[in-house]
Amino acid sequence: MIGSVTVKRFSQILLGAVGGIFVLSFHQVQVAVSFPIVELKTENQVVATEINSSEDLIEEPALPPLGKPDPFLPQKPFPPPSLKKPEKPYYSLVPERYKGKTIYQVSPRNQEKVIALTFDDGPWLETLKVLAVLRQFDIKATFFILGRNLILYPEIIQQVVQGGHAVGNHTWTHPYGKMEPRKAKSEIENTSAKLQLMTGVKTRLFRPPGGILDNGTAEYARSKNYAIIMWSIDTKDYQQPSAEVLANRVLTQASPGDIVLMHDGGGNRFQTIEALKIIIPELQKRGYRFVTVPELLALSE
Ligand SMILES: [Zn+2]
Image (cartoon, rainbow, N blue to C red; front, side, top):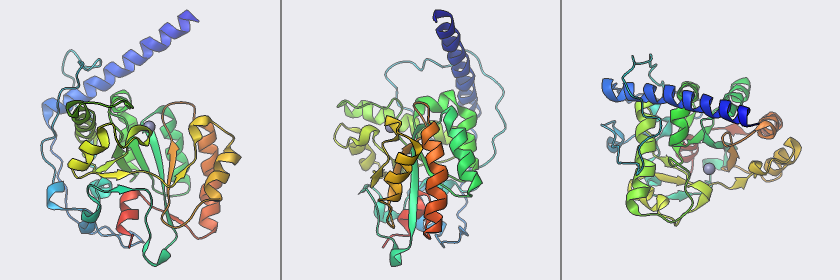
């Protein structure tokens, strides 16, 4: 057992080191990504201008100290990887009226049957399986990511962004306890800055770990005009019940404007992935359309 633990730890360090090199290369090269304001042609007629605003224009991201040195900080520079510009970077921004607000669900205009699937705690190896299912049904979702996992899985966050999904901030280390404003700032700003440096995506979506709204993170995020995205349907998939139980939790509660909480990171997500294969086609049969959180907000009354 000791042998396997050591090998696993070693591979994690190796992966981390590679991830760290990846990021530093961006720091040094300072890749500039422009955000064109273009019409967003989707079937649901959400326009980019509704989500974009002047303060969302990309600028040099802030990187406050994390408290401890980044354990994966590389020792020497490395050639930058090829970065494909995200097609729809504004997918992770929010309409003006929702900035600084806490949202559990919305009332869609005309009671349109729209619903948003959200996945927390990635990027993670299981994220790839979630992406495959979403691709199979040709739907978009929203991923609330951890900064520390961005470093571990730089290729996976690229796939999330290239897949046209929205990305939100879920802090760097997933803290639960009450913290100093400086620590909250560090948790949030570092995560958003790394995401932006690695993918070009600037996000204004925030989900507090554990849904805790009073430990300092949500307060800081609100002050920076993030929309605090909670949920109206909790699948409790972290308890790893069967796929059928998970699917039923969604199917018995689903109504227009719901935000569904699931997890792609943090463990084995086999049941979650199997549940998706039940939930998506069944809700589509009932006439639902799956949208990202920014789209859901833009479609609300
Ligand atoms: Zn979480």
